[in-house]
Length: 478
Figure 1 (cartoon, rainbow, N blue to C red):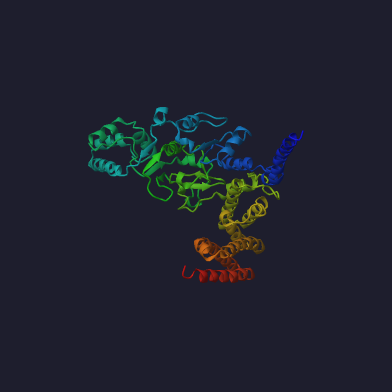
Figure 2 (cartoon, rainbow, N blue to C red):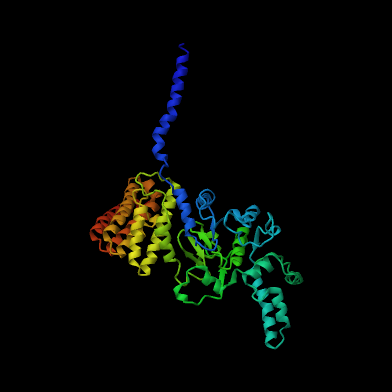
């Protein structure tokens, strides 16, 4: 009997361990009342145009799986197609994209399977030196044509196409090798030039102007009704350097762009890194959580945001998963998406202010404050809070602006004080972080001063000077 007591006691303790664990950690992991994954996934899909069976390119887990869930389980926006660029490098996924799904037709990919099967066209090099080779043939042919002999020009056109750098010509002739005359000519050069290759890093694409007008995309005001005849695709990496090759997923993106002909809207999720933009960021126009591909150079035209569509999406269509409820559990992944949503509100507000639509700008700011409150999503430079404060100042709402900038400045101040609590050696190691927070506080003080919040500015500028002087004194000789 005595031998059984330890066993009974151990059993009782084993029962209490999970109860204790649940009791202590339940509030940290309680997701009840939180529908962020579903709602934020719907927000991506609601960004897309309602007509035309749009396509959206995604790349990571958080901008793909919530969309798939909504389409497959909730039956939401089954007319649209979510295309993950990470998977688009594989033949099996391209097979899927070439098939209809739910209410979405197949993606506009015409390549035969043998042309994208594993091991085939995994990447295609960009050979910019080929441009001089092509141009020399056109120069000679045009000179003869000017003298009345168009025979050679016709031959050159049959080999290279009338516009040798047009996207469809490059795909068919240089990538897929569908022109025997070109292959024969390259053999005769004796320079061991092998297809496939891309003969330029500046591709042009002919624009169907009527298709653009029918598409529903915003036409920049600076253009009036003058839609460009061609768009230029400059193949650059995320740092602006010329690309040396295009990988299979990028080739598929170009193939879809060539065949969609602006009749089927194509979008890029804003959470996709610029390294996957194919150097086409200057053709993007933001409508919410996605950029729309356009034939316009939106950088030069200063037309990066369709404020009308974006306002309607954020104010009337987007949902926020219950993050306005006090005490809701928000983990680091959800917090990142909350940051993204606050940032796009600030982008919209900035555009509305620039357009002189101050009433809408104020309404959007107030709505962002209501749906993404600071008690759940603290103000931070990374989520656009500084821009929110500046916008409130610009709209004459100093009290609301002060609330935000005060919280930001106090956070910067707390970090500076904490770094100064370290010993000198530790502070020297963390010096870059101290200076970074000092620069943030300096910018925050300058904003207060600019908009005449003098008392608040003085409160922080005095402490900034004191703390920075202490840092400089301690770091002398380090």
